[in-house]
Amino acid sequence: MRTVKLSQQALDQWVAGLIRTQAVIGVQAKGDRFEFAPLGRSSDLRLDYDVTILPPKMFFQPAREPLLAFDGAAGFKTLLSDEPFVLLGVHPYDLVAILQMDALFAADNDDIHYRSRREKAVIVACDVQSASPNGFAGCMGTATVSQGFDVLLTRVADIYVAEAGTAAGAALLADIAKAPEADAVNLARREQVWQDNQKLLRKHDLRVSLKELPALLERSYDHPVWEEKARRCFSCGSCNLVCPTCYCFDVQDEVGWDLKRGVRCRTWDGCLLKDFATVAGAHNFRKSRAERYRHRYYRKGKYMPEKIGQIACVGCGRCISACVSKIANPVEVYNRLQEES
Ligand code: SF4
Ligand code: SF4
Image: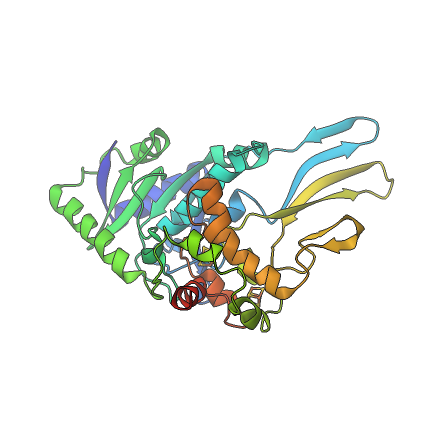
């Protein structure tokens, strides 16, 4: 696969060309923060961002997603999105989260709605240029990636190195056929960026080995930390909604006035929300805040590793920033369990 070097001007021209020919979602400023949104001009792209408010999962699993339309007389029709798009500027930790979602939505019952969006997307990842205030991807092994992207951009000095990881990525880079191949100096500098990012993205220092985390949680079910922290929890669910590895959803039928037609929709849900675990007969099997608070850590550090072999926290730090009570920091909780176990 090609690995080329691009000046800032060449990158701008390449992005402008992509925008002319296809739908492009790219990182842009939103006030003094950043978001993924449809990109209209290459000059709006901000590859120097630290972290986006919401992760890019929303382009594969939207917050509200019609799954099917039904009509009493005509039956139902599955609704699928088949719009191709380029997702531009995904940081390595968010890419790892997307790869986890790929595995989860393909396991057991293959989710055709997720897959149809995912298969239409070309992901241009970008190595981190500015560390976010709460990121700890360096502790989670997600500060850099060597696969899973279609194209990987890395800023080295005043140029970008662009590597194609798939045939789709190579096709995207074919638009800049005249770009020179990256040389040994460029590649050595990229290697240095990767090494630096492993150290830079450690705003919180996890002192538990990732391998030991499931066993640590196994013996910490009755630890007082769950009750203590949960006393300050508002059950607002923000920590779930901003998390790139949280994918839980609710499915509801929205029926029209004629009681014949409607749509079946799924919407984001979160295990910290009070009604998340309410089932028939109004029974709630995680009624207390402490049970719900604890569940989030167990899901990420024990249940998901048991299912997919990876910790379902990529260290983006969004939950830490989003929690108004300042109790959602996984590093703080896991370190405390380690110290007191
Ligand atoms: S648990 Fe927090 S730090 Fe970990 S991936 Fe989710 S939002 Fe990011
Ligand atoms: S963001 Fe904080 S307050 Fe809100 S549900 Fe999560 S832990 Fe509780």
